[in-house]
Amino acid sequence: MNTFGNIFRLTSFGESHGPGIGGVIDGCPSGFELDMEAIQRELNRRKPGQSRITTPRKEDDEVQFLSGIYEGKTTGTPIGFIVWNKNQHSADYDNMKQVYRPSHADYTYQMKYGIRDPRGGGRSSARETISRCVAGAIARQILAKQGIDINAYTSQVGNICLDKSWEAYDLSRIEENPVRCPDPEKAVEMEELIAKVKGQGDTIGGIISGVITGVPVGLGEPVFGKLHAALGNAMLSINAVKGFEYGDGFAAAGYRGSERNDCFFNDNGKINVRTNHSGGIQGGISNGQPIYFRVAFKSVATLLREQETVDMEGNDTILKARGRHDACVLPRAVPIVEAMAAMTILDYWLMQQTRNCW
Image (cartoon, rainbow, N blue to C red; front, side, top):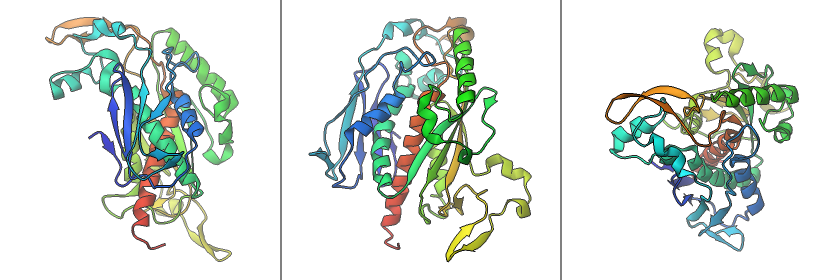
């Protein structure tokens, strides 16, 4: 289960403290001219050491393509790539080899496989998401040619949250602050909160909101391949994600149908809707409206403070983790959310192309 997608597929490999993280992309259309600098920019947005509120681990995270590209164009064959790890501090995890970090994957991996790599969490580390950002960057470029655009941003950290819908913000401004929040004033508050929590050896969670525009009508399958289910599957596969909702989400449970239905009208010869409570998806199929969604991230499990736990023999003990860790994953998770959305939409766009009904 290390492969994502149906037609546009990514298989990822590698561990946090192994030689590198890489992947193989299959099903990418041929003859597409790639912007290599744009791919590297997406990796730079995800890499550690960006600011005072992220992990201080220093990695160049430069991608090396091994196959599937000739003279800058995709060949239609598998695209192999790797990003080499260069700044591992594996000794930081020596005191964790025989104990289980609370709320981490240590225990479940040990029980599932009978063995685990304790260095940086091994395969359960968010460093695995490097491969997603590479594949997502390629997917975004292909989608852009179809007029499909994807943006995500930090909308909540702890109890500090934005109180307006995505239309009220200039999403091009998210790179102006380290939190990647489109509201400059809220961004300062969020940054200060993360810095405070980090100084206490603690962690904090929040929400990333996303919006996909330019999606044509018809993406998604009617029963088991619903588009929102695919997006939910994509987002819930990201480390530390605990919840996904689209459109009105859970708030829809409090509305009457007369309050929430998106009524159609003739918009100068084109069918349109007066509202978009559905979040751009109806019956599991895109309806041409913007798809907007929210992804909830828990606080990071690894704390730089004492916690009760047990060792591998079941003995009660106290753990104080060492190493370099994010106090809040949201700033670096924004490009990951965008990447997963891009891969999902491109995959379903390609699936629709096979029907040849447009």
